[in-house]
Image (cartoon, rainbow, N blue to C red; front, side, top):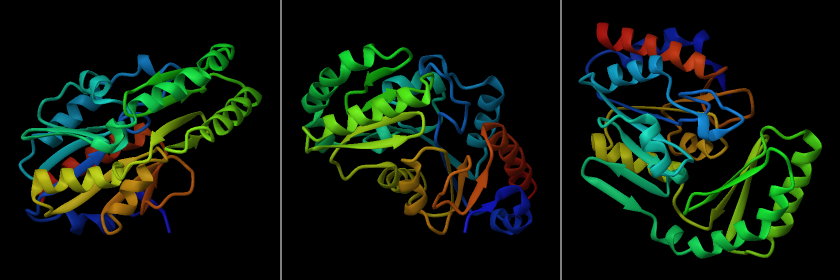
Length: 259
C-alpha cells in the first residue's frame, strides 16, 4: 500500500544512517520540475539544480535522471555533467563510461515516422495538440485541449496504432506516448544505471510521476520508491508535487550529512 512520504520519514532515518552508498534516480518532468502546457518551455529550476548538485557531490550518492524525453532534449535542460541519464523511457542511456541505445528501438524509427505522418494532419487541426518525434518514440501532448478534444485524440490514436502492430500506446490524462515493442524501459534502465554507478550495491531511491515510471517502481520493490501525484501506483510512498520533491531532497541531505 502506498503511504504519504512525509508521515513516515522517521521510519527512513535508520535506512539512510551510516555510510551505505545511495543511488538516487528521478524522473524529470513533473518530478524535478512542474509540467507546462508547452513542454518546450520546461527547464530545471535554479533551486532544484542547486539541490541536485549538492546531492550528487555528496560522497555517498550517485544520481541519475531518467526521462521520457530524448537525451538530446534532456541533457541541455539539466546540464549537469556529474549525473547519469536515461532518455526515451529507458531506450537510451548516457553516463561516464557508458553510452547505449536500444537496437530493437532503433529498428523501429521508420515505423514511428510513418505513424507520425498518419496522424499529423489530424493533430494539426486540433488547437493545442502537438506531436514530437523523439526518434525512438513519439510524444503526443494534448494538455491544453478540452476534455472532448482529448477524447477524440485518444480515439484517433487507438484506431491508428491498430495499423502498426509493432507499436504500442501508453495514455496519460494529458498526453500519450507511442513506443516500439522493446525490452527496454525505465525499469531496465534504472537497473543498468545502478549497476554501472554503484555496482548494484547500496540503497536505491526512485521518484517519478509518469506511467512509465511504474516500470522503475516495480524494478525496485524494496527500494524507497516515491510517486509524485495522486493516481494508483506501485511505489511505496507518494508526495503531492515537484515542490514536495524539493522538500524531500532537503530532508535527505540533512539526514545523510548528519549520519
